[in-house]
Amino acid sequence: MTVYWGTIALVGYLVVMARAFDPSVDSRAMGRLPENRLTQIFLLSAAVVLAFVAGFRWQVGADFNAYMTNYGRYSQDFFEDLRTFNEPGIKAIAWLLSSITTNATWFIVVVSGITIGLILLTIARYSIATPMSYMLFIFVGTWHGSFNGLRQYLAAAIVFAGHRWIIERRPIKFVLLIGLASSFHLSALALLPLYLLPNRRLRPAMLMLLGAASLTLLYSSDAVLNLSGLIKGEDTSTTLYSMTAINPLRILVAVLPVALYYTNCVRTKEDDEWFYRNIIIVHAVVMTAASYSAYLGRFGIYTSIFLPLALPRLIDFPDRQLTTLIRGLTIALFAVFWYIDVSGSSALNDFRFVFDK
Image (cartoon, rainbow, N blue to C red; front, side):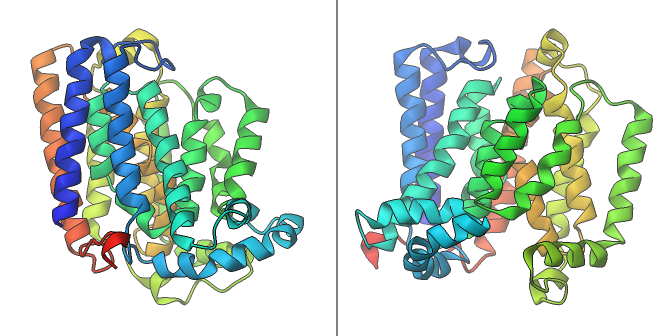
């Protein structure tokens, strides 16, 4: 765990310094990067550190060996998979990279760099609490989660990077975005209904309806697994992974923020953008609905990636001292969740760099 602690400490220092050189970094207009040059350098440095650690890991992540092994096959199968649209996006990267190197380590480096770069660039553009969002990127599980599922996290990063097309109501661009994301992981197609998420405050009746839908899906998980297997062309309903329940702590972490949904928050009152608060509800619904299956729980990847943007908007009270206190407490609680999650995973807790193999 030493590498993790060192990385967290360094990233924490860099994002604090970024804000110190530009205290207005959290109050800029949506979509604009910080203008202070030193702030840009510190945020970029934090992103490079996180991408470096993710890219140059060795035997870390449940699917690490699979991707190392499949690198050659991905590059060979690119044109055939492009013709059949069998997730050709990841193969395209392998095909392009194979003309430069046969070393699969660079495939991990490039994919991790693109994924983390897209996510942190989006955070830097749209967060109202940039240091908090950077740390939450680590602590909500997105950073180390990308060690376990390169394709799906890259698909999620693509959707995350283009999420403003939902808010701005650009349906054609959003459909094209989902098409691109699904070229890396077909599960991204399930995000098409996300376009229907309103950018306004949800009424209590709608919350009750979403809760009912969540419970309905929860007790229909077998049917959902069968549908997923039909789309993928394989049986996913009887695997051990599909039949393993999600850790209740994950469900609790997803549901608890809903308690802050109706709080009086400054930035949301100013710009009337409720999408980020509404995605908290969607995330809780998805994780509750998938409680009985770790396989279905992977759809939560697409919603948990929004937490670094959404949580600061939930914790944005008129009392700024209270806001600072609750934000600090939130980071600390998610840090505990992160530690429990990573330290308890044999695929993650023994971190090694490729230089140490």
